[in-house]
Length: 401
Image 1 (cartoon, rainbow, N blue to C red):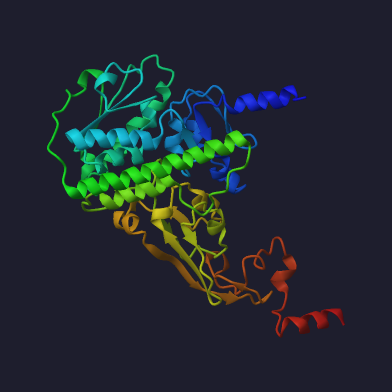
Image 2 (cartoon, rainbow, N blue to C red):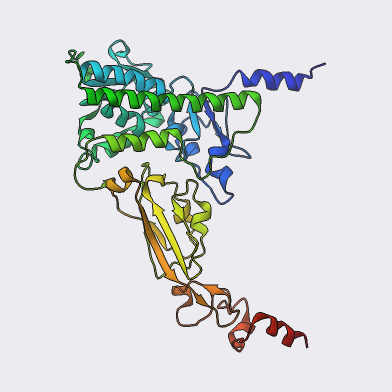
């Protein structure tokens, strides 16, 4: 006989909140050092629980705010998938050269090319996808936000729009983005002439990428219903991220770099070479493999790939000597080409006390000891100890004789 608890769990699998989360993709699941709370801070309904494995609570309304802030794309919204919405925007861009998006409560849904549960769902991949599909103008029409339960998510949408408009120097297409009220909604545009072959090829590419996103979502939903754990995506990029990078490569480039924004999807790192102690903590906490430490017996080398950096901030937060910080700008060419650059390369030395290799830094300057042997407040005997010489085996035999 089936127990009531088992029956209740079975029913709950088919009564999922509008938003779902792949817990394995959450940085809190990837490393115990992560204290990320972006989704909780963005959710206007307190519908996300981070106690234990992250989960979405029944209070979720499907506004999509969590999707736009998660650096690793752990959240999904079944009612407004990215693949579906991009397909709708593509058809509009192909036909008229413009795209109009609005929310489900708006009075202009009849003339909209795509209707989102809430405009809080609009983020960089969706908006760049509209421009990539050939839209010269992309208009977001706000619905009656006054009194709407999702209204607290609107300030972030305004910041997202302002951020993309600020990219116009490096990505000129984004100058055509507007956020307007219902009364300012533009009239329906006229159909335009047939698009050229190059643009048709782009449509085919974006459709394939959109289907890949949809397939990933379907697989994750199936995993949730079956109760099987999803595979950890650590060290990989989500389909949404790959799509975003593909759009950057296909949009016409201007001049300059993207201004860094703590809420944005891109970041570049600057490293204080004197402060870096070569601990490698930054490499271990990076969820996407943007930071790598190639093997080198004679030096500590740290490489950085901006296209894989999702601006999660874990490396900056957990760098003990505070050697890593965000650069003020992000080079577009590094994102488009997937450039891997050497961020740090420092020769190693051998500690005069323990004999082990270490990377000299500000914390060890002038002493010849590694940072651990240099902690005289913790190891007072080390400060007065004579430097040890000879191979390790002879030291042991001398100490025990």
